[in-house]
Every structure is written in structure tokens, then in C-alpha cells.
Image (tube, rainbow, N blue to C red; front, side):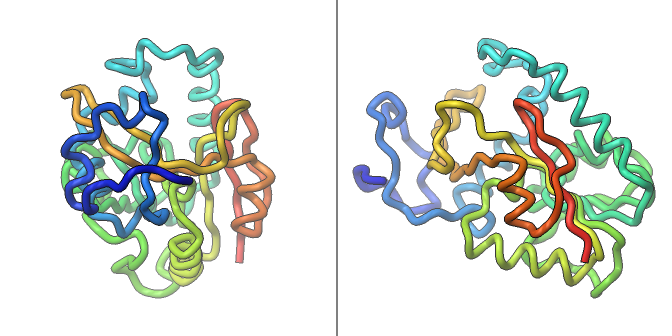
Length: 233
């Protein structure tokens, strides 16, 4: 992927007008969980994150046939998982965490996301933390759950995350965005927030079979908008 040079990581979100229209993508190597600019983007996006699920704000103008049905199916899948001691890594606002049964701990690097999750998912511990270096003891959970995180990770970060998940739990459940016709398998995406600010985020789109293969597990969900897979160690 070739493109004009972009500002250093910490300033990537400052002024990206015209990037999408020109078809340009950055020359930066794929990075997500360890990227400062990405962290700033999600901190800024926290208050409007759930608009993506609900079809509100800027998302309301998108044509997403079958989206509401797919979200309901995803929520039903999460709610139907057996109760377990679960750590929800990159829990965001807690949109999916609230449907997990059992003892659930949420972890996210964004303080604003954590604040929203604490207010939306009562009676559960939610804390700021590093998804690639969880501050919990070996084997302290039955399950690691993560939604819309794994599909952003380039190979090096995937390796670290899978090792960390295996360290803390005997099972991993991954939910992510399905690869749809016309979508490239990976790209740097321009994301526009309600305030008009533009940001670049590395993103991968996955088939259900591909996700299951990457984590070494089995398919749980294969819909037009979402995929999910499970692996037990």
C-alpha cells in the first residue's frame, strides 16, 4: 500500500482532510494496540461509540441492510454463552459486556470508555488496563472475551494477545466484523467523528472460518455483519 507520508503517530488525527477522497493510505506499518494516535481516537470516540451499534449520529446515513437483525443475533450469542468468570478485553462502553453472564471484569485502555462502561454495566468491575499485558494472575479467569479488538491487530500484536489470553484463561471468545463483498482484508481506514475530526485506524475484516483458524478454534457465528469464534486450551 503506497501513499504520501503522514505526520508522526501522536499527531495523525490532527488534520487528515482529503485523505479518503484522494484514495490515499498511509505508509505506516500496521499497528493498533500499541499506537498512541489510535488510543487518542478511541478516547475521543467514547461518547459516540454506541452510535455505531444503534445506527445513530453520522452512522444513521449509512445503508446497512440487515444490520439491526445482525446486532440482535450477536447479542443473543453473547447472552447465550455459559456463565463464567470472564475478563472482557477492550470492553469499550460495555455494550456487549452487559450481556455476559457470570462474574465479569471489563478492561479497556480508554478512561472515558471505562467510565461509560461503569455507568452502563452496574455491579461489575471495569478498569483501565493494557490488553497486551493484563494485570491479572495466571489462570485467574475461565474465559477471555473480546469484541471488535482482535480484527484490528497486526500479526505481532495478535501473537502477544493470544499468548496473554491463554495465560489468564482456559477459553477465548472473539467477536469481530465480517468481511463483506468489496472490502479489502486489511486497510488503514479514515474515521470521522461527530466533531468532524479525522483519524486513521488500522482494520482487518475476517471471515468466520478465517477467524477460527487464526485463533485455532471453532466458528460460533457467521452472519453478514459479524463473526465469532471460540478456542479452549
